[in-house]
Structures are given as structure tokens and as C-alpha cells.
Length: 123
Image (cartoon, rainbow, N blue to C red; front, side, top):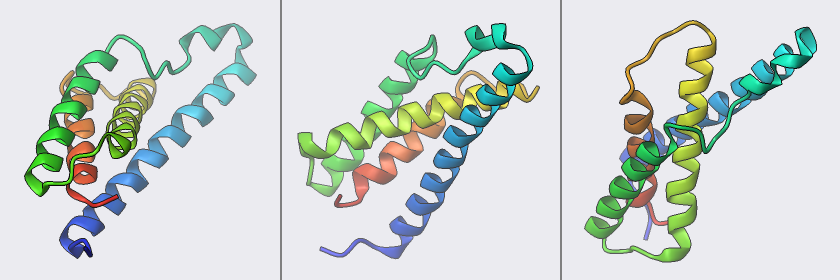
């Protein structure tokens, strides 16, 4: 079963943004440790305080999308939920470190979109 380009292109774009967010938090962490070694306590924690809400949004979106497509499997669930949730926490953390204040729901929305895209694609 070949996926539709209308799903593949947004999934690739979402994945690129997610990968850039993870790279950004890693670069920000390395820079902050080089400048002030004691600032390591402000590092990105993928399972931080916002993670439960973000993960719940990813679980719900992935489950609905995979169920609608009729190919829900536990094997695909790990990547389809954990990667969007961790990428969303990275994006929120990187945005917060750069002085941008995003709404609290933005991480959950980003994770839900990614999880829904992954849930709708046959992985």
C-alpha cells in the first residue's frame, strides 16, 4: 500500500522541523555549558513537566489516525508516539530558551500533528 503524497510531504516536513528542534536543544545545551558550566541544570529534559500532557496528545492522535486507517499495531506505536512527544518537548524548550513565549498547548499540538501523520502512514 503506497501512501499518498498528501500525507508523505507533511510528514517529511514535520520530521524535518522535529529533527531541527532536537538539534537546536543540543546545540543550546553545549553552548550554555561552555559559557557557564554550572548551567547544566537548565538542560532539556524530554520527560520534563510538560511531557505527560504532550504524550497524552500524541497517544490520542496516533490512536485515532491509525484506527481510522485500519492498521493499528503495537510495533508502530512506539515510534509514532514517543518521537513526536520528545520532539515537541524539544521544540518548546528551544523556543523558551531563545526568549520566545509559546502557549502551553503548542507542544501538545505539535506532538498531536506529528503522531497523527505517523499514525496515518503505513510505517
